[in-house]
Image (cartoon, rainbow, N blue to C red; front, side):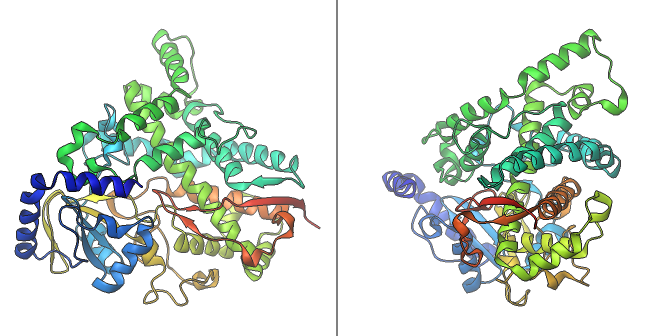
Length: 490
């Protein structure tokens, strides 16, 4: 419906954009853009992409090559779908192509204070990234957070023991666990409870998903920047209202802590300071803290909970892999032990290969024109890295659609940004700084669930017939949330 509405509006304003069309075609012949499917006048390839861009764009890559160009209105989108093209963009031309294409839905007064959505790698981006790496994701910081992780994990297991023989949405449970892990690192307290209905639009999870969805809606302002100021579909206004509701969950905490520091009312030992304390010590404003907290929650919670949901679904469908993992994890619960569990880590890699949490990575933007594989990427072109397609490429992976953790046993292939066959966390200067924390959470939660429970589908459904359809967004979700019954191990 949104695409039909958008195309109708485009046809009404045809005369305004004839200039852009002629300009694009002239530049295309002159600059040797990557190949791509021919588009419609004015709207370009918008209608061809459809409701499942992952599949559609991957099919375009099979036809036109691993580096393609698409025209979305007046915007040029370049998509890389192979390890070689990803390496060219994320490594060889990382500096020039490390800008960020930010959706119009996220253009607000606090937009300059984003980390993930920062349009450039300027001073604020460098300061915030350094703070995050040092105070949240460094080995020293992660070690200091180990007791907190154990505490939140124990709360999750206690909740599940109380729900035995009941149907549980495992995505919601892990979401709550991860959200409270991060909220305690940030603010020193829980912000959500296990009994809250996260799937509703009024819940915090629903509001976060709505914010993510706003970033992927078909938005005239993204396709035709000339109309950004008008916000014709009201997406930016709706998103701002939603974000303000999200910020309300922690703004009182921030205001209270700021007042305590200013009045020197509460002295906190160095080792007990939260990330909020560090931000306040560095003079961060209310808007800066809101933007930072929002991104940390979205990047750290939804990605981890969706990956665990996919991992459990794949293990349920693959009994042999489940048996091998259960055998390896017997009596192993300590974090220090899990990092050495080769099959557990192989299962995590295989899940991230098949179901990368962010299937296109976060869109990049070219600061200036550059040559990539004999093609021109013009200044301000948007750049997608299709890690979903790379992970399913038969030229890269043997039997790519099958869940085979064994492919990583004895392999040095890793997801730390050097092996472009497997880059679910990105690479280069825009690589996810939370990788170490995310992997620890994946290891700990998956191992704990396996050691503590037997997983059963409702009504004794056959796991081999489990629906594995995907729902596209900024993050890759299961179309049908995974419902499980947790039973005691026999």
